[in-house]
Image 1 (cartoon, one colour):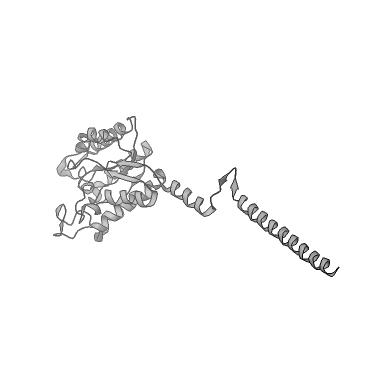
Image 2 (cartoon, helix red, strand yellow):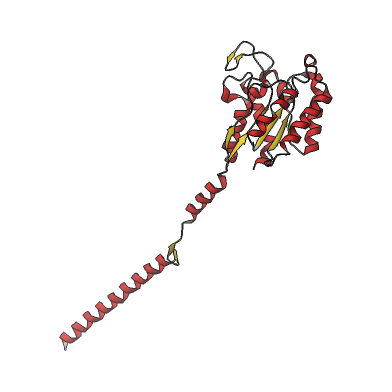
Length: 251
């Protein structure tokens, strides 16, 4: 009788352990299945967030075709990557996730008449983005550009660009460092911007600060600097001003 009782206790203990083991296995299986749906393992929230962030921040390559005079050419930034068009392009890349290809027409500069002559080249580039920076040389009496001619040329440039199948985003930029004689030209730029509902980067507060120009006699990638054109700091400020007025339209 004692042996039977002893073996009964042993058998009961083994059965209890087996039941506990099965319960543990079932619990683990349920935990595994809680991360599985229709045979597909669900991603952790953190991984999903990272993936969504990458998709949100990735944007297409855009073609940026700046139009303008010597400022757009980069006189007198120390190096090519310091000119405002390159600084602005990098801001679009770093802040908004674009890949920016800077195109434009090199060397035509000058007045709006030169800008009109470069229109065919700009159109052929099929730009997504254009900055138009003219008026500084038009405002110089030595160039003989009347305000009416300037306004007509600027209007023609915008009308041509907005008549294309692929219509670029356009930002206008006011004149540089010509004092009171440039005020009518700045007013014309702002009026045309209002006409076409385009943002205008007013850079007058930048050139009025002498620390943003010169000094004369510094060797740059465009030759020896003068006291008229912006330096690297001036170029940076111009780019920041353009970005400030165009950020919303580029998002």
